[in-house]
Image (cartoon, rainbow, N blue to C red; front, side):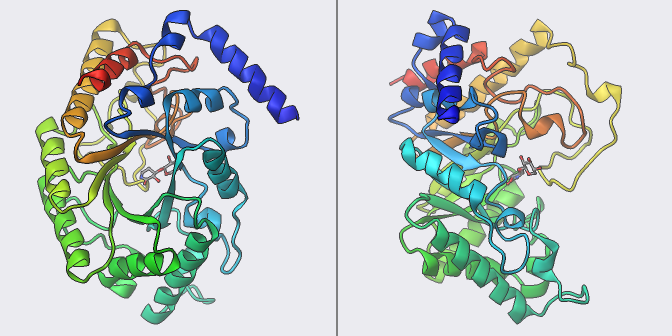
Length: 373
Ligand code: XIL
């Protein structure tokens, strides 16, 4: 009852906050309705009702959701054999109750996997057979738990390096490259009706694009089900080249699978390294020069940012035949991982709604792109 009152209050507040102009505007999901789904990642605060304006805002603009963290292995199986689905269930049920396309993220990933997954009681690496069994149990239990409620799973996340080799993760080192096909097989065995995706960052880069194509071709040649490729879309003001994004979408679509932009965000504060990555183990000390917009963004910079958003959506819109979903990695600027990664305590502006839950001016222009025939 209390939660309902909060949500009703939040909806009212959202209506008051939105000027009539923005509130009557078509939503992002409506603008792209005949083209692709528009998704958003939700965090546990939002799922648990502690960011209540987030809920009506999500329902207005988005028709797909993914959990930012609560369905990753460290949360679903923090200890061996102890599965915790409370937050995952709340998230998934919210999606089902509101007719949203619910995406599971993610089953097999070297990050945010609990340490026990790879080690024995003495702290040594487990054997190949043991790790395969642990993978099977994890995938089987999690996929079956959410069966019928999740539309698709990011089965394997980030198996490749930017140079196109295999990432030297524990999964790779202990099992070998077959861990990818095993993960897809186990997921299919657990639920033959759910869609299965391979998700990756920087796969706009030619070497990683080619490696992704080969990875998927290998699965297809072996008759292993794969339904889509996720292009994470963690961008910067310089990365990627739009021609590379376009080329990757086309190369992936040519494999006969769906292409999804799964974690789109555009941080506007400086990237503190020569190499752009979404590898969450990367971190840098805080320095003032890396936090230039703590008091707001100058107009001249805002124009450059807006142009970049529009160019990204132009590429996606031009490839609407191939792209099935575009998911933003965060709802509003106040709650985005970019404020704390790879440097803690910065003020970034990487998504489409501001700290007051208002659509940024560029949103109406993105909507115009979507409404083009
Ligand atoms: C990030 C979350 O946004 C953070 O809250 C968390 O601390 C680290 O992970 N690639 C992925 C996502 O596939 O799961 C990551 O999400 C960002 C990079």
